Amino acid sequence: MANSKSYFIYDDETGEIRRQFSGPIEWAVLQLADDEFCIEAEGDITDFKVVNGEVVPKDQSEKDDLLYQERIGSFPSFFSSTDTDIDTAISDYFLGRVDIQQWKTENYTFLRKAFYPEMGESLDAQVKLSSTDPLLQAAGQAQLDQYSADCMAVKARFPKA
Image 1 (cartoon, rainbow, N blue to C red):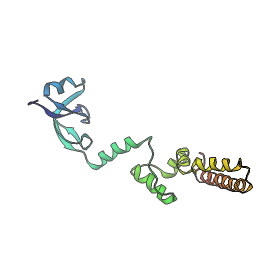
Image 2: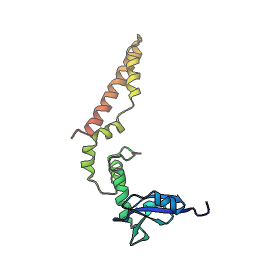
Image 3: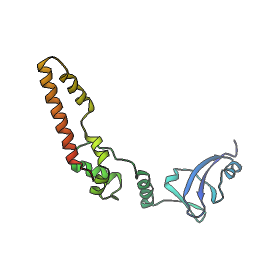
Image 4: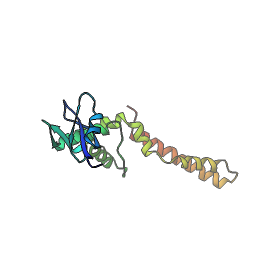
């Protein structure tokens, strides 16, 4: 396509770029809703907006607002289990915009699931308990006791609201 170009399709009122289109301008125009316009442009649409018919870069706070909105309702990853590291991960993930203790209270079920011991430990203990070997039964009971203690520690660490 000789006339193929890249266009941002944007909200006429807010300047927010909704999507990008590549192709002839005639095809781009067919993609428009009543409140949309298109402008020839290339780049990551999350980095730009349209102001007075010109493509301009978003400032960092606008980019952070978009990222924060995308992250609401999702969960950070935890690579360490210390309380300080968990708090830092939550703060970093939500760009410092959430009350960490409130978030932990509201999302205790997620945190519990993330930190409970592996279910396989409990199943392994049950198998050992069903054995006829007294040594395996004792090991199974010890393993089950440890599993229960670990679960209770997680419940205490992340209590219900």
